Length: 613
Image (cartoon, rainbow, N blue to C red; front, side):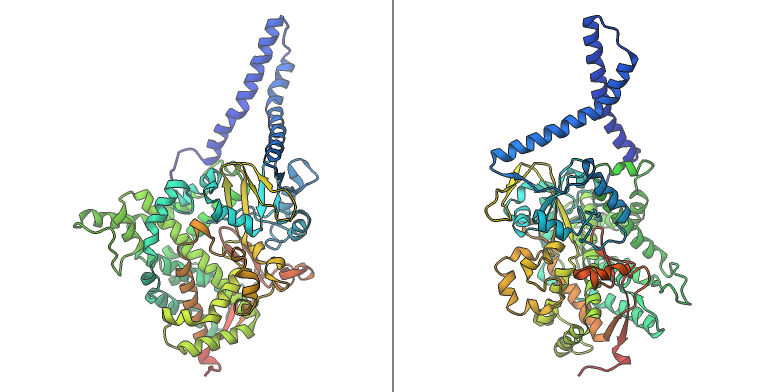
């Protein structure tokens, strides 16, 4: 997370200037030299034309040469180029313009498509002029957007995603483009590194997520009680809450205490009010520092999203200053003292066994036992905090939305919860393992609304992908290509999941559909990634989500949506097909999936209604 006195934009222009000056100067020198050899006087107009034309002509020559080179390489490998989206203007400029003009109101993954994402994590939508499903029907599940003559390949094909994540893992990396965009926030942490640095972070972090550690629920319980108390107070006043805001605070407080041993205590700041509430000031209340940290951390992630969305030219929108700098100052003010204190304690401690783990040891304690490198420790803790907070909050928000939309499933889930743990007992790890319907609800939520809908890689070497269509040549993937894969679109494919793929039906995880669709092709369900980069915190996330859902349904017997104006989809969505026609919120994607405008709900407390026996 290095800082320089130059803004990203100025640094980018300085580097880019060479690519303009060098060909222009070279062209002028060549023309002048040739003229002097011939004894011809050079007109200033000719020199001007050479200077102005050198860069665009050079770029045009590069594009043409690249096109020819790709076709030759593909032919040598017995392959074909990936089918391309074709716009009406050069470089698909018309597609980019539509993206800018219409991206606020389109449904995620329908008429627009996100180009990245992240393990981390982004938000970028490209209008194709017609639904992406139609483009895929015409061109196949793997397509090339080819924006501004730069390859950007999207795939929703399980075999291609398997190749990226598992069978040819070493050929696919986060890549320098993503690392540069995310460096000021994520540094060289596990989500923003490749090769040996990634292996180092992965090796350091893996031992911390043991079974014994992730099955300790005291931290979850304390913060869940706090969150539920706040919700009940608001509901007693007859007001809705933004569940997305509440649960994001719960996961942030839980993750910070679990990882750092220091709770950010964002739940202490006042909850936002509905827009028409008399009591509302919607000003930050309570612990301003906690609210400020949560806001800064979120905005820093949004900045990464904007950068990756724009592409390689993102520094041009940060000419005056680094858009993450002020937000990261707030984050660093909280985190740096914790890390420095941990390092100081370790430096004065007696000899210790690096392989020993105390029950109360935090991630920071574990990392300082392994290294004294402040940057490595800081980068890794921030990466894990981001994953521990946002992905879990995203899924829990989607769970509550879907249960509100389908009260029959909520009733059935409550029946399982009450039969296993009753209305008051804190669930244990063994309780959660036995709740098959709860796991089915979570998996079905992750299928329809995966926390990371789009992810991105870059391939190191030229390669080919098996054709998704029988009898056709494989697809040629040039080295250095930006490759986006969408588990959201893959999870909703009717040819992979059956004709009811767009419906929320937890029973698909309990009946014959598991054997028919998932078991023969397990790579059609990848909410936590796969292969060597599979999420280390997968079981931790399942435990935290399960625990919170149980606690909520022990305390509340009914959930209804109470949409705020900013949450409501445009009226014309109802005229479209698929999930877009029935959706009651606006799903969007930055580093993770979120509800634009929040997820406003009301809940009926058990002590105010009928208790299930």
